[in-house]
Image (cartoon, rainbow, N blue to C red; front, side, top):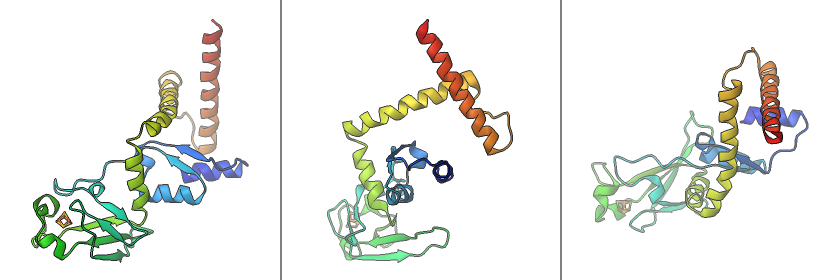
Amino acid sequence: MTQTLEAEAERGFEPPSELYVDTAYVSDNSLHDQQERGTELVGPARPAPQHFKGYAADQFNVLNNKGYAVCPAGKKSVHRCLIDDSSSKDGYYRYEWGHHCDQCQQQKQCSNRKNGRRELVVGLHHDLLQARRIEMQSDEFKERMHQRSGVEGTVSESKRGYGLGRTRYRGLEKTSLGNYMKGAAVNVHRWIARLL
Ligand code: SF4
């Protein structure tokens, strides 16, 4: 996506104000990166990974900007640390609830650690992902995603009818040109169908 946007910028296009994408492109970092560029990334987020069949991250209210998270039992975390992971460009936050977990009725659904204390590891921009997971439930968001579903239909038509899924050329430039020609063919086909 970054490469495509850079190529468009080189051709003199303004950055898009909205970018419609599928689930694979939506992460805490991609939401943040696009926000920094002034672009709203519009797409559904994956559900949070399940924690040993217990409470997943989306059952916590994470407030990275305030420095704490609230667990499903309504308790504020007692400790947060920044994990500087060399494999990630940003690192992670780890939240802990310490003594709150010791007497918690929900401990078995929440933690599988020996001492029963839950730790939650989230990205630095998890707030954005969390907000998206909530927003996805709204009718307004579902309505907005209809636009993308329409484009998805066109891509599918282009693949089935015009071989968009497989390039006949080597190199991005020729492949791009081939894709534009296939797009033009779809338009001409639709235009003739409409006239008929
Ligand atoms: S085990 Fe700890 S983190 Fe989990 S719900 Fe209970 S108090 Fe909250």
